[in-house]
Image 1 (cartoon, each protein chain N blue to C red):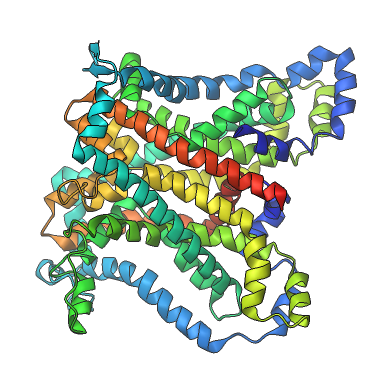
Image 2 (tube, rainbow over the protein chains, first blue to last red):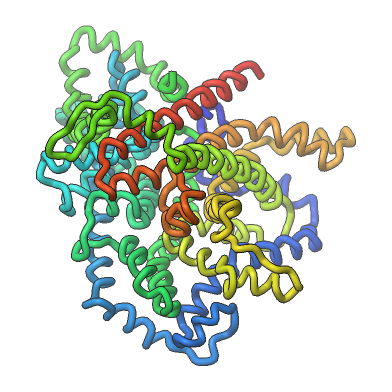
Length: 304
Length: 315
Protein backbone atom coordinates (compact mmCIF):
# COMPACT_ATOMS: atom_id res chain seq x y z
CA UNK A 1 0.00 0.00 0.00
CA UNK A 2 2.72 2.38 0.90
CA UNK A 3 4.51 2.06 -2.39
CA UNK A 4 1.75 3.78 -4.36
CA UNK A 5 3.47 6.58 -6.22
CA UNK A 6 0.67 8.93 -5.23
CA UNK A 7 1.45 8.28 -1.59
CA UNK A 8 4.92 9.68 -1.85
CA UNK A 9 4.00 12.87 -3.57
CA UNK A 10 3.41 16.16 -1.84
CA UNK A 11 -0.19 16.94 -1.09
CA UNK A 12 -0.71 19.13 -4.14
CA UNK A 13 0.24 16.41 -6.55
CA UNK A 14 -1.85 13.96 -4.62
CA UNK A 15 -4.88 16.19 -4.94
CA UNK A 16 -4.33 16.39 -8.63
CA UNK A 17 -3.83 12.68 -8.99
CA UNK A 18 -6.86 11.95 -6.89
CA UNK A 19 -8.97 14.41 -8.80
CA UNK A 20 -7.95 12.48 -11.83
CA UNK A 21 -6.14 15.13 -13.77
CA UNK A 22 -3.54 13.65 -16.07
CA UNK A 23 0.03 14.03 -14.87
CA UNK A 24 1.02 15.71 -18.10
CA UNK A 25 -2.08 17.08 -19.75
CA UNK A 26 -0.50 18.05 -23.05
CA UNK A 27 0.48 14.52 -23.88
CA UNK A 28 -2.73 12.82 -22.97
CA UNK A 29 -5.48 15.07 -24.14
CA UNK A 30 -4.30 16.30 -27.50
CA UNK A 31 -3.76 13.07 -29.26
CA UNK A 32 -7.12 11.36 -29.30
CA UNK A 33 -10.64 12.43 -30.00
CA UNK A 34 -13.26 11.44 -27.50
CA UNK A 35 -14.89 8.13 -28.25
CA UNK A 36 -18.50 9.11 -28.90
CA UNK A 37 -19.98 5.62 -28.90
CA UNK A 38 -18.33 4.71 -25.63
CA UNK A 39 -19.39 8.04 -24.15
CA UNK A 40 -23.00 7.50 -25.06
CA UNK A 41 -23.05 4.01 -23.62
CA UNK A 42 -21.29 5.18 -20.45
CA UNK A 43 -23.64 8.10 -19.92
CA UNK A 44 -26.77 6.01 -20.38
CA UNK A 45 -25.39 3.31 -18.08
CA UNK A 46 -24.41 5.77 -15.37
CA UNK A 47 -27.72 7.59 -15.51
CA UNK A 48 -29.67 4.35 -15.18
CA UNK A 49 -27.50 2.85 -12.44
CA UNK A 50 -26.51 5.86 -10.36
CA UNK A 51 -29.02 8.60 -11.10
CA UNK A 52 -32.31 6.71 -11.20
CA UNK A 53 -32.30 5.81 -7.47
CA UNK A 54 -31.78 9.47 -6.56
CA UNK A 55 -34.42 10.56 -9.05
CA UNK A 56 -36.77 8.08 -7.43
CA UNK A 57 -36.11 9.60 -4.01
CA UNK A 58 -36.78 13.11 -5.29
CA UNK A 59 -40.00 12.40 -7.21
CA UNK A 60 -41.42 10.27 -4.42
CA UNK A 61 -40.61 12.96 -1.87
CA UNK A 62 -42.63 15.59 -3.70
CA UNK A 63 -45.68 13.49 -4.61
CA UNK A 64 -48.94 13.29 -2.74
CA UNK A 65 -49.43 10.33 -0.44
CA UNK A 66 -51.58 8.10 -2.68
CA UNK A 67 -49.45 8.82 -5.73
CA UNK A 68 -46.22 8.11 -3.88
CA UNK A 69 -47.49 4.76 -2.67
CA UNK A 70 -47.56 3.50 -6.27
CA UNK A 71 -43.75 3.54 -6.02
CA UNK A 72 -43.28 4.35 -9.68
CA UNK A 73 -40.68 6.57 -11.25
CA UNK A 74 -43.23 8.88 -12.82
CA UNK A 75 -43.29 12.63 -13.02
CA UNK A 76 -45.34 13.92 -10.05
CA UNK A 77 -48.80 15.03 -11.17
CA UNK A 78 -48.90 17.61 -8.39
CA UNK A 79 -45.93 19.02 -6.56
CA UNK A 80 -46.33 18.92 -2.80
CA UNK A 81 -42.83 19.90 -1.75
CA UNK A 82 -43.91 22.45 0.84
CA UNK A 83 -46.69 20.35 2.35
CA UNK A 84 -44.51 17.24 2.58
CA UNK A 85 -41.63 19.24 3.99
CA UNK A 86 -43.74 20.69 6.81
CA UNK A 87 -45.45 17.37 7.45
CA UNK A 88 -42.06 15.71 8.01
CA UNK A 89 -40.70 18.57 10.07
CA UNK A 90 -43.75 18.73 12.31
CA UNK A 91 -44.03 14.98 12.71
CA UNK A 92 -43.86 13.79 16.29
CA UNK A 93 -43.34 17.21 17.86
CA UNK A 94 -40.60 18.44 15.56
CA UNK A 95 -38.43 15.42 16.24
CA UNK A 96 -36.55 15.91 12.99
CA UNK A 97 -35.57 19.44 14.00
CA UNK A 98 -34.28 18.18 17.33
CA UNK A 99 -32.43 15.42 15.50
CA UNK A 100 -30.80 17.91 13.16
CA UNK A 101 -29.71 20.02 16.12
CA UNK A 102 -28.31 16.94 17.86
CA UNK A 103 -26.49 15.78 14.75
CA UNK A 104 -25.02 19.23 14.23
CA UNK A 105 -23.76 19.41 17.81
CA UNK A 106 -22.34 15.91 17.54
CA UNK A 107 -20.62 16.54 14.21
CA UNK A 108 -19.18 19.96 15.02
CA UNK A 109 -17.93 19.08 18.50
CA UNK A 110 -16.44 15.71 17.67
CA UNK A 111 -14.75 16.81 14.44
CA UNK A 112 -13.29 19.97 15.99
CA UNK A 113 -11.82 18.09 18.94
CA UNK A 114 -10.71 15.20 16.77
CA UNK A 115 -8.68 17.55 14.58
CA UNK A 116 -6.83 19.26 17.44
CA UNK A 117 -6.21 16.10 19.42
CA UNK A 118 -4.96 14.05 16.46
CA UNK A 119 -2.86 16.84 14.99
CA UNK A 120 -1.00 17.19 18.30
CA UNK A 121 -0.38 13.46 18.51
CA UNK A 122 0.63 13.21 14.85
CA UNK A 123 3.07 16.10 15.26
CA UNK A 124 5.01 14.43 18.06
CA UNK A 125 4.70 11.02 16.42
CA UNK A 126 6.22 12.30 13.18
CA UNK A 127 8.88 14.53 14.76
CA UNK A 128 10.17 12.62 17.73
CA UNK A 129 11.71 9.21 17.20
CA UNK A 130 11.36 7.00 20.23
CA UNK A 131 11.07 3.34 20.97
CA UNK A 132 7.33 3.81 21.54
CA UNK A 133 6.73 4.78 17.92
CA UNK A 134 6.40 1.18 16.78
CA UNK A 135 3.74 0.51 19.37
CA UNK A 136 1.92 3.76 18.61
CA UNK A 137 1.88 3.05 14.87
CA UNK A 138 0.54 -0.40 15.60
CA UNK A 139 -2.24 1.05 17.77
CA UNK A 140 -3.13 3.61 15.11
CA UNK A 141 -3.48 0.92 12.45
CA UNK A 142 -5.43 -1.30 14.85
CA UNK A 143 -7.97 1.48 15.17
CA UNK A 144 -8.66 1.21 11.45
CA UNK A 145 -8.98 -2.56 11.41
CA UNK A 146 -10.42 -3.79 14.70
CA UNK A 147 -14.18 -3.60 15.13
CA UNK A 148 -14.97 -1.81 18.40
CA UNK A 149 -16.30 -4.08 21.17
CA UNK A 150 -19.80 -2.81 21.78
CA UNK A 151 -20.98 -3.91 25.20
CA UNK A 152 -17.61 -3.42 26.93
CA UNK A 153 -17.61 0.14 25.59
CA UNK A 154 -21.05 0.67 27.07
CA UNK A 155 -19.73 -0.77 30.33
CA UNK A 156 -16.84 1.73 30.33
CA UNK A 157 -19.16 4.60 29.47
CA UNK A 158 -21.50 3.60 32.27
CA UNK A 159 -18.61 3.52 34.69
CA UNK A 160 -17.78 7.08 33.65
CA UNK A 161 -21.42 8.15 33.86
CA UNK A 162 -21.39 9.03 30.16
CA UNK A 163 -23.67 6.34 28.73
CA UNK A 164 -26.74 7.83 26.99
CA UNK A 165 -25.19 11.28 27.00
CA UNK A 166 -24.19 13.46 24.07
CA UNK A 167 -20.78 14.03 25.65
CA UNK A 168 -20.20 10.28 25.74
CA UNK A 169 -21.13 9.89 22.09
CA UNK A 170 -18.89 12.81 21.10
CA UNK A 171 -15.94 11.21 22.89
CA UNK A 172 -16.70 7.89 21.19
CA UNK A 173 -16.71 9.47 17.74
CA UNK A 174 -13.38 11.13 18.53
CA UNK A 175 -11.83 7.89 19.77
CA UNK A 176 -12.95 5.97 16.66
CA UNK A 177 -11.87 8.73 14.26
CA UNK A 178 -8.43 9.43 15.71
CA UNK A 179 -6.61 6.75 13.68
CA UNK A 180 -7.67 8.05 10.29
CA UNK A 181 -6.84 11.64 11.26
CA UNK A 182 -3.41 10.79 12.66
CA UNK A 183 -2.42 8.99 9.46
CA UNK A 184 -3.40 11.96 7.31
CA UNK A 185 -1.81 14.54 9.59
CA UNK A 186 1.40 12.58 10.02
CA UNK A 187 1.88 12.23 6.26
CA UNK A 188 1.33 15.94 5.80
CA UNK A 189 3.55 17.01 8.70
CA UNK A 190 6.43 15.00 7.21
CA UNK A 191 6.42 17.49 4.30
CA UNK A 192 6.90 20.46 6.66
CA UNK A 193 10.63 21.09 7.23
CA UNK A 194 11.89 20.61 10.77
CA UNK A 195 13.97 23.77 10.44
CA UNK A 196 10.74 25.66 10.94
CA UNK A 197 10.20 24.28 14.45
CA UNK A 198 13.89 24.72 15.23
CA UNK A 199 13.83 28.35 14.14
CA UNK A 200 10.74 29.01 16.21
CA UNK A 201 12.36 27.37 19.24
CA UNK A 202 15.48 29.47 18.80
CA UNK A 203 13.23 32.53 18.76
CA UNK A 204 12.06 31.46 22.19
CA UNK A 205 8.73 29.80 21.42
CA UNK A 206 7.66 26.98 23.73
CA UNK A 207 6.26 23.72 22.32
CA UNK A 208 2.66 24.90 22.57
CA UNK A 209 3.42 28.04 20.58
CA UNK A 210 5.53 26.14 18.06
CA UNK A 211 2.66 23.80 17.41
CA UNK A 212 -0.33 26.11 17.50
CA UNK A 213 1.24 29.21 15.93
CA UNK A 214 3.75 27.72 13.49
CA UNK A 215 2.69 24.21 12.52
CA UNK A 216 -1.07 24.22 12.94
CA UNK A 217 -1.68 27.11 10.50
CA UNK A 218 0.43 25.29 7.91
CA UNK A 219 -1.85 22.27 8.18
CA UNK A 220 -4.76 24.29 6.81
CA UNK A 221 -5.28 22.27 3.63
CA UNK A 222 -5.13 18.87 5.30
CA UNK A 223 -7.36 20.14 8.10
CA UNK A 224 -9.99 21.08 5.53
CA UNK A 225 -9.77 17.56 4.11
CA UNK A 226 -10.02 15.90 7.52
CA UNK A 227 -12.90 18.13 8.61
CA UNK A 228 -14.90 17.50 5.47
CA UNK A 229 -14.37 13.74 5.38
CA UNK A 230 -14.97 13.22 9.08
CA UNK A 231 -18.03 15.49 9.10
CA UNK A 232 -19.63 13.32 6.47
CA UNK A 233 -18.64 10.16 8.37
CA UNK A 234 -19.95 11.37 11.74
CA UNK A 235 -23.11 12.87 10.28
CA UNK A 236 -23.91 9.61 8.50
CA UNK A 237 -23.00 7.43 11.47
CA UNK A 238 -25.81 5.14 12.51
CA UNK A 239 -24.21 2.39 14.58
CA UNK A 240 -22.63 4.47 17.34
CA UNK A 241 -25.70 6.60 18.12
CA UNK A 242 -27.75 3.41 18.02
CA UNK A 243 -25.64 1.79 20.72
CA UNK A 244 -24.39 4.69 22.80
CA UNK A 245 -27.14 7.29 22.62
CA UNK A 246 -30.41 5.39 22.53
CA UNK A 247 -33.69 7.09 23.36
CA UNK A 248 -36.23 9.26 21.61
CA UNK A 249 -35.32 12.74 22.76
CA UNK A 250 -31.67 12.76 21.84
CA UNK A 251 -31.89 10.90 18.55
CA UNK A 252 -29.62 11.85 15.65
CA UNK A 253 -30.87 12.23 12.09
CA UNK A 254 -29.87 8.72 11.05
CA UNK A 255 -31.69 7.15 13.99
CA UNK A 256 -34.75 9.29 13.31
CA UNK A 257 -34.78 8.18 9.70
CA UNK A 258 -34.48 4.57 10.76
CA UNK A 259 -37.41 4.92 13.18
CA UNK A 260 -39.47 6.74 10.55
CA UNK A 261 -39.12 3.65 8.39
CA UNK A 262 -41.31 1.62 10.70
CA UNK A 263 -43.71 4.43 11.59
CA UNK A 264 -44.25 5.84 8.11
CA UNK A 265 -44.31 2.49 6.47
CA UNK A 266 -47.18 3.41 4.21
CA UNK A 267 -46.46 7.12 3.92
CA UNK A 268 -43.72 6.89 1.35
CA UNK A 269 -43.86 10.56 0.45
CA UNK A 270 -42.90 11.54 4.00
CA UNK A 271 -40.29 8.81 4.34
CA UNK A 272 -38.58 9.89 1.16
CA UNK A 273 -38.84 13.57 2.03
CA UNK A 274 -36.93 12.65 5.18
CA UNK A 275 -34.27 10.84 3.13
CA UNK A 276 -34.06 13.86 0.84
CA UNK A 277 -33.54 16.26 3.76
CA UNK A 278 -30.84 14.06 5.26
CA UNK A 279 -29.05 13.88 1.92
CA UNK A 280 -28.79 17.66 1.65
CA UNK A 281 -25.83 18.22 4.03
CA UNK A 282 -23.57 15.62 2.33
CA UNK A 283 -24.65 17.01 -1.04
CA UNK A 284 -23.61 20.52 -0.04
CA UNK A 285 -20.27 19.20 1.23
CA UNK A 286 -19.85 17.31 -2.02
CA UNK A 287 -20.58 20.33 -4.23
CA UNK A 288 -18.09 22.55 -2.42
CA UNK A 289 -15.38 20.07 -1.46
CA UNK A 290 -15.63 17.26 -4.02
CA UNK A 291 -11.90 17.17 -4.73
CA UNK A 292 -10.89 17.52 -1.10
CA UNK A 293 -13.10 14.59 -0.11
CA UNK A 294 -11.77 12.39 -2.89
CA UNK A 295 -8.19 13.36 -2.07
CA UNK A 296 -8.70 12.68 1.63
CA UNK A 297 -10.37 9.34 1.12
CA UNK A 298 -7.87 8.07 -1.41
CA UNK A 299 -4.76 9.25 0.43
CA UNK A 300 -6.05 7.97 3.75
CA UNK A 301 -6.86 4.73 2.00
CA UNK A 302 -3.51 4.40 0.30
CA UNK A 303 -1.67 4.91 3.54
CA UNK A 304 -4.01 2.86 5.68
CA UNK B 1 4.05 -6.35 11.51
CA UNK B 2 1.24 -4.05 10.51
CA UNK B 3 3.08 -1.04 11.80
CA UNK B 4 6.27 -1.36 9.82
CA UNK B 5 5.14 -0.46 6.29
CA UNK B 6 3.80 2.92 7.32
CA UNK B 7 6.82 3.79 9.37
CA UNK B 8 8.93 3.37 6.29
CA UNK B 9 6.94 5.97 4.40
CA UNK B 10 7.43 8.63 6.96
CA UNK B 11 10.94 7.88 8.10
CA UNK B 12 12.78 8.77 4.85
CA UNK B 13 12.02 12.53 4.88
CA UNK B 14 13.42 13.19 8.37
CA UNK B 15 16.58 11.17 7.74
CA UNK B 16 18.68 13.97 6.22
CA UNK B 17 17.92 16.31 9.07
CA UNK B 18 18.15 13.66 11.76
CA UNK B 19 21.94 13.59 12.16
CA UNK B 20 22.05 17.35 12.60
CA UNK B 21 19.13 17.26 14.99
CA UNK B 22 20.57 14.37 16.94
CA UNK B 23 24.08 15.75 17.35
CA UNK B 24 22.53 19.02 18.42
CA UNK B 25 20.28 17.28 20.84
CA UNK B 26 23.26 15.61 22.47
CA UNK B 27 24.27 19.00 23.77
CA UNK B 28 20.84 20.54 24.31
CA UNK B 29 18.90 17.34 24.76
CA UNK B 30 16.26 18.99 26.87
CA UNK B 31 15.36 21.54 24.20
CA UNK B 32 14.89 19.00 21.43
CA UNK B 33 12.91 16.76 23.72
CA UNK B 34 10.70 19.47 25.07
CA UNK B 35 10.09 20.86 21.61
CA UNK B 36 8.06 17.73 20.96
CA UNK B 37 6.73 16.97 24.41
CA UNK B 38 5.15 13.60 25.09
CA UNK B 39 2.14 15.19 26.74
CA UNK B 40 0.92 16.16 23.26
CA UNK B 41 -0.09 12.51 23.02
CA UNK B 42 -2.08 12.71 26.20
CA UNK B 43 -5.59 13.78 25.06
CA UNK B 44 -5.59 11.38 22.12
CA UNK B 45 -4.02 8.59 24.16
CA UNK B 46 -6.48 8.91 27.04
CA UNK B 47 -9.55 8.89 24.79
CA UNK B 48 -8.25 6.10 22.61
CA UNK B 49 -7.14 3.92 25.52
CA UNK B 50 -10.24 4.36 27.65
CA UNK B 51 -12.84 4.12 24.88
CA UNK B 52 -11.19 1.75 22.42
CA UNK B 53 -8.22 -0.21 23.74
CA UNK B 54 -9.66 -0.94 27.18
CA UNK B 55 -13.04 -2.20 25.86
CA UNK B 56 -11.21 -4.34 23.32
CA UNK B 57 -9.19 -6.05 26.03
CA UNK B 58 -12.21 -6.25 28.32
CA UNK B 59 -14.15 -8.00 25.56
CA UNK B 60 -11.80 -10.99 25.76
CA UNK B 61 -12.70 -11.43 29.41
CA UNK B 62 -16.43 -10.68 29.29
CA UNK B 63 -16.85 -13.01 26.31
CA UNK B 64 -16.23 -15.80 28.82
CA UNK B 65 -18.99 -14.72 31.17
CA UNK B 66 -22.72 -14.57 31.55
CA UNK B 67 -22.92 -10.84 31.90
CA UNK B 68 -25.65 -8.48 33.06
CA UNK B 69 -23.48 -5.33 33.34
CA UNK B 70 -24.11 -5.13 37.10
CA UNK B 71 -22.62 -8.55 37.74
CA UNK B 72 -21.12 -11.38 35.79
CA UNK B 73 -20.62 -15.08 36.14
CA UNK B 74 -17.64 -16.85 34.64
CA UNK B 75 -18.75 -19.64 32.32
CA UNK B 76 -15.63 -20.41 30.30
CA UNK B 77 -16.08 -21.00 26.60
CA UNK B 78 -19.83 -21.68 26.75
CA UNK B 79 -20.65 -18.57 24.72
CA UNK B 80 -18.32 -19.64 21.96
CA UNK B 81 -19.66 -23.18 21.98
CA UNK B 82 -23.13 -21.75 21.61
CA UNK B 83 -21.90 -19.48 18.86
CA UNK B 84 -20.62 -22.37 16.81
CA UNK B 85 -23.49 -24.73 17.57
CA UNK B 86 -26.60 -22.58 17.24
CA UNK B 87 -27.50 -22.70 13.51
CA UNK B 88 -28.66 -19.07 13.41
CA UNK B 89 -25.31 -17.90 14.75
CA UNK B 90 -23.29 -20.12 12.43
CA UNK B 91 -25.25 -18.68 9.51
CA UNK B 92 -24.17 -15.25 10.68
CA UNK B 93 -20.53 -16.30 10.65
CA UNK B 94 -20.75 -17.81 7.17
CA UNK B 95 -22.74 -14.85 5.84
CA UNK B 96 -20.16 -12.40 7.16
CA UNK B 97 -17.45 -14.07 5.13
CA UNK B 98 -19.64 -14.37 2.03
CA UNK B 99 -20.67 -10.73 2.30
CA UNK B 100 -17.10 -9.53 2.80
CA UNK B 101 -15.62 -11.58 -0.02
CA UNK B 102 -18.40 -10.94 -2.54
CA UNK B 103 -18.53 -7.17 -2.02
CA UNK B 104 -14.75 -6.89 -1.98
CA UNK B 105 -14.32 -8.88 -5.20
CA UNK B 106 -17.08 -6.98 -6.95
CA UNK B 107 -15.61 -3.65 -5.92
CA UNK B 108 -12.18 -4.63 -7.23
CA UNK B 109 -13.52 -5.72 -10.62
CA UNK B 110 -16.11 -2.99 -11.12
CA UNK B 111 -13.91 -0.29 -9.59
CA UNK B 112 -11.09 -1.11 -12.00
CA UNK B 113 -13.43 -1.24 -15.00
CA UNK B 114 -15.05 2.06 -14.09
CA UNK B 115 -11.66 3.66 -13.44
CA UNK B 116 -10.36 2.57 -16.85
CA UNK B 117 -13.54 3.89 -18.43
CA UNK B 118 -13.32 7.17 -16.53
CA UNK B 119 -9.68 7.77 -17.44
CA UNK B 120 -10.30 7.13 -21.14
CA UNK B 121 -11.37 9.76 -23.62
CA UNK B 122 -15.06 10.09 -23.14
CA UNK B 123 -17.39 13.04 -22.88
CA UNK B 124 -18.56 14.18 -19.47
CA UNK B 125 -15.83 12.34 -17.62
CA UNK B 126 -15.78 14.70 -14.63
CA UNK B 127 -19.53 14.56 -14.22
CA UNK B 128 -19.61 10.77 -14.44
CA UNK B 129 -16.85 10.58 -11.81
CA UNK B 130 -18.91 12.70 -9.48
CA UNK B 131 -21.96 10.58 -10.16
CA UNK B 132 -20.23 7.31 -9.28
CA UNK B 133 -18.65 8.77 -6.13
CA UNK B 134 -21.65 10.56 -4.67
CA UNK B 135 -23.35 7.45 -3.17
CA UNK B 136 -20.28 7.02 -0.95
CA UNK B 137 -21.27 10.17 0.91
CA UNK B 138 -24.97 9.45 1.25
CA UNK B 139 -26.43 8.07 4.46
CA UNK B 140 -26.32 4.27 4.47
CA UNK B 141 -29.73 4.14 6.10
CA UNK B 142 -31.16 6.36 3.37
CA UNK B 143 -29.67 4.15 0.68
CA UNK B 144 -30.92 1.04 2.46
CA UNK B 145 -34.49 2.30 2.73
CA UNK B 146 -34.51 3.51 -0.87
CA UNK B 147 -33.37 0.18 -2.24
CA UNK B 148 -35.68 -1.75 0.05
CA UNK B 149 -38.52 0.11 -1.64
CA UNK B 150 -37.03 -0.32 -5.11
CA UNK B 151 -36.65 -4.05 -4.46
CA UNK B 152 -40.18 -4.53 -3.19
CA UNK B 153 -41.34 -7.83 -4.69
CA UNK B 154 -44.69 -6.51 -5.95
CA UNK B 155 -44.62 -2.75 -6.37
CA UNK B 156 -40.88 -2.12 -6.47
CA UNK B 157 -39.38 -0.39 -9.48
CA UNK B 158 -37.06 -3.31 -10.23
CA UNK B 159 -39.87 -5.78 -10.62
CA UNK B 160 -42.12 -3.24 -12.34
CA UNK B 161 -39.46 -2.88 -15.02
CA UNK B 162 -38.86 -6.62 -15.19
CA UNK B 163 -42.61 -7.20 -15.38
CA UNK B 164 -42.87 -4.75 -18.28
CA UNK B 165 -40.50 -6.92 -20.31
CA UNK B 166 -42.34 -10.05 -19.27
CA UNK B 167 -40.00 -11.39 -16.59
CA UNK B 168 -41.27 -12.35 -13.16
CA UNK B 169 -38.89 -10.55 -10.85
CA UNK B 170 -37.72 -12.45 -7.79
CA UNK B 171 -38.39 -11.37 -4.19
CA UNK B 172 -35.04 -9.64 -3.89
CA UNK B 173 -35.16 -9.29 -0.14
CA UNK B 174 -37.81 -11.86 0.73
CA UNK B 175 -36.26 -14.87 -0.98
CA UNK B 176 -33.97 -16.49 1.62
CA UNK B 177 -31.40 -17.53 -0.95
CA UNK B 178 -31.24 -14.06 -2.49
CA UNK B 179 -31.56 -11.61 0.39
CA UNK B 180 -27.91 -11.49 1.40
CA UNK B 181 -26.72 -11.11 -2.17
CA UNK B 182 -29.23 -8.34 -2.84
CA UNK B 183 -27.92 -6.41 0.14
CA UNK B 184 -24.37 -7.09 -1.05
CA UNK B 185 -25.28 -5.66 -4.45
CA UNK B 186 -26.55 -2.47 -2.82
CA UNK B 187 -23.37 -2.28 -0.75
CA UNK B 188 -21.37 -2.51 -3.98
CA UNK B 189 -23.53 0.18 -5.57
CA UNK B 190 -22.86 2.48 -2.64
CA UNK B 191 -19.17 1.69 -2.21
CA UNK B 192 -17.85 1.18 -5.73
CA UNK B 193 -17.25 4.92 -6.07
CA UNK B 194 -14.50 4.83 -3.47
CA UNK B 195 -12.81 1.89 -5.21
CA UNK B 196 -13.10 3.75 -8.49
CA UNK B 197 -11.44 6.95 -7.28
CA UNK B 198 -8.66 4.93 -5.64
CA UNK B 199 -8.06 3.16 -8.96
CA UNK B 200 -8.25 6.45 -10.86
CA UNK B 201 -5.55 7.87 -8.57
CA UNK B 202 -3.46 4.78 -9.25
CA UNK B 203 -3.96 4.84 -13.02
CA UNK B 204 -3.24 8.52 -13.58
CA UNK B 205 0.00 8.16 -11.65
CA UNK B 206 1.28 5.71 -14.29
CA UNK B 207 3.59 7.69 -16.61
CA UNK B 208 1.93 8.10 -20.01
CA UNK B 209 5.25 7.29 -21.70
CA UNK B 210 4.66 3.62 -20.88
CA UNK B 211 1.40 3.60 -22.81
CA UNK B 212 2.94 5.52 -25.70
CA UNK B 213 5.93 3.19 -25.95
CA UNK B 214 3.64 0.17 -25.88
CA UNK B 215 1.49 1.69 -28.57
CA UNK B 216 4.53 2.33 -30.75
CA UNK B 217 5.47 -1.30 -30.24
CA UNK B 218 2.04 -2.26 -31.54
CA UNK B 219 0.32 -3.28 -28.33
CA UNK B 220 -3.46 -3.14 -28.58
CA UNK B 221 -5.64 -1.66 -25.89
CA UNK B 222 -6.25 -5.03 -24.20
CA UNK B 223 -2.50 -5.70 -24.14
CA UNK B 224 -1.81 -2.26 -22.68
CA UNK B 225 -4.41 -2.85 -19.99
CA UNK B 226 -3.13 -6.33 -19.23
CA UNK B 227 0.59 -5.53 -19.20
CA UNK B 228 0.73 -1.93 -17.97
CA UNK B 229 -2.42 -0.79 -16.18
CA UNK B 230 -3.11 -3.98 -14.27
CA UNK B 231 0.35 -4.58 -12.78
CA UNK B 232 1.07 -0.91 -12.10
CA UNK B 233 -2.31 -0.34 -10.46
CA UNK B 234 -1.49 -3.11 -8.02
CA UNK B 235 -1.05 -0.90 -4.96
CA UNK B 236 -4.52 0.47 -5.64
CA UNK B 237 -5.84 -3.09 -5.85
CA UNK B 238 -4.28 -3.91 -2.49
CA UNK B 239 -5.87 -0.84 -0.95
CA UNK B 240 -9.29 -1.58 -2.41
CA UNK B 241 -9.22 -5.22 -1.29
CA UNK B 242 -8.13 -4.43 2.26
CA UNK B 243 -10.47 -1.48 2.70
CA UNK B 244 -13.55 -3.19 1.34
CA UNK B 245 -12.83 -6.39 3.26
CA UNK B 246 -12.53 -4.47 6.53
CA UNK B 247 -15.71 -2.57 5.71
CA UNK B 248 -17.58 -5.61 4.41
CA UNK B 249 -16.80 -7.92 7.32
CA UNK B 250 -17.86 -5.26 9.85
CA UNK B 251 -20.87 -4.12 7.87
CA UNK B 252 -24.04 -3.66 9.87
CA UNK B 253 -26.14 -0.61 9.04
CA UNK B 254 -27.04 -1.50 5.46
CA UNK B 255 -28.10 -5.03 6.38
CA UNK B 256 -30.01 -3.75 9.38
CA UNK B 257 -31.82 -1.11 7.35
CA UNK B 258 -32.76 -3.52 4.56
CA UNK B 259 -33.54 -6.93 6.05
CA UNK B 260 -32.69 -6.88 9.78
CA UNK B 261 -31.06 -10.22 9.17
CA UNK B 262 -34.19 -11.75 7.69
CA UNK B 263 -36.02 -13.53 6.26
CA UNK B 264 -35.45 -15.77 9.27
CA UNK B 265 -31.75 -15.56 9.94
CA UNK B 266 -30.72 -15.95 6.33
CA UNK B 267 -29.07 -12.56 5.93
CA UNK B 268 -27.71 -12.23 9.45
CA UNK B 269 -24.05 -11.32 9.81
CA UNK B 270 -21.94 -11.31 12.97
CA UNK B 271 -22.47 -7.59 13.45
CA UNK B 272 -26.25 -7.98 13.38
CA UNK B 273 -26.05 -10.98 15.71
CA UNK B 274 -24.07 -8.82 18.14
CA UNK B 275 -26.84 -6.23 18.07
CA UNK B 276 -29.63 -8.78 18.45
CA UNK B 277 -27.96 -10.47 21.42
CA UNK B 278 -27.30 -7.07 22.95
CA UNK B 279 -30.94 -6.12 22.57
CA UNK B 280 -32.02 -9.41 24.09
CA UNK B 281 -29.80 -8.70 27.10
CA UNK B 282 -27.28 -11.49 26.45
CA UNK B 283 -24.31 -9.22 26.94
CA UNK B 284 -21.78 -12.01 27.34
CA UNK B 285 -22.93 -13.71 24.14
CA UNK B 286 -22.96 -10.39 22.31
CA UNK B 287 -19.39 -9.73 23.44
CA UNK B 288 -18.39 -13.23 22.34
CA UNK B 289 -19.77 -12.24 18.95
CA UNK B 290 -17.48 -9.21 19.06
CA UNK B 291 -14.50 -11.41 19.80
CA UNK B 292 -15.44 -13.76 16.94
CA UNK B 293 -15.73 -10.77 14.61
CA UNK B 294 -12.36 -9.52 15.81
CA UNK B 295 -10.82 -12.91 15.10
CA UNK B 296 -12.46 -13.18 11.67
CA UNK B 297 -11.31 -9.72 10.64
CA UNK B 298 -7.75 -10.13 11.85
CA UNK B 299 -7.47 -13.71 10.57
CA UNK B 300 -8.46 -12.59 7.08
CA UNK B 301 -7.07 -9.08 6.83
CA UNK B 302 -3.68 -9.40 8.52
CA UNK B 303 -2.30 -12.35 6.50
CA UNK B 304 -3.70 -10.80 3.33
CA UNK B 305 -2.12 -7.47 4.15
CA UNK B 306 1.20 -9.13 4.81
CA UNK B 307 1.01 -11.36 1.75
CA UNK B 308 -0.04 -8.63 -0.67
CA UNK B 309 2.66 -6.27 0.54
CA UNK B 310 5.32 -8.94 0.48
CA UNK B 311 4.62 -9.84 -3.13
CA UNK B 312 4.97 -6.22 -3.98
CA UNK B 313 8.54 -6.21 -2.73
CA UNK B 314 9.35 -9.22 -4.88
CA UNK B 315 8.17 -7.54 -8.07
